[in-house]
Image 1 (cartoon, rainbow, N blue to C red):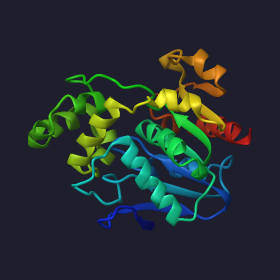
Image 2 (cartoon, rainbow, N blue to C red; image 1 turned 120 degrees about the vertical axis):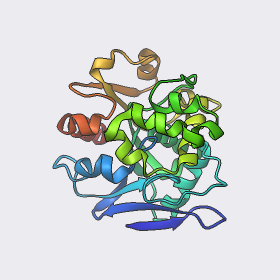
Image 3 (cartoon, rainbow, N blue to C red; image 1 turned 90 degrees about the horizontal axis):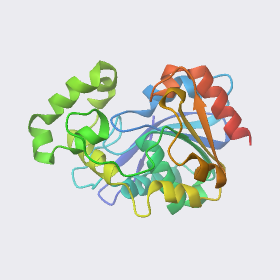
Length: 255
């Protein structure tokens, strides 16, 4: 486990690092998750092993610190991640980023282009979404006020998301979880999709084949983003079908 101070108050981002050759690969988890749990199998998969790999946890999540005075916007998450990568001596990294982590990775690449050479986005959020009371994920969490969520809304979310997601969601600071969900549903200006379209680096977007065509696929493809459906999986593609995920990711990073 490694760490880096990423705020003026001394808060630390931590990650599990696997040794290997450069350029580094950086794995970024989604909302209420942790990178070692979601990406350990992928980082050592025969098609992907051998690179220096940082399985990094965003502030408020997993093994990283949980500052109460951090605003948890996508921009703030991206800037804190940038500071951690700078301390780790990472430049031109290949980012493999899931869900909210994909949104953070897009913002990171737009704000700190020297840190990122390639993006593999895993069913990432590209657009703002409205809060949706009673649903799972960020839309359901964001439907609560922070006071409501901390007073007991988190228990309702726990029961909705099930034991698999809750196993890592419970490691997330509850205030950080709510603030991150709210900011994810709000998105960025320009939107994450617009930022992605403007990036000048190799970009691949992986999505579950069963979800059907990705909204705006034609525009993404015209801008050079490879959109790749993966069979036999849900939102957690790397966990549901690791071999297909590794094949698609290795192909994306080879071009």
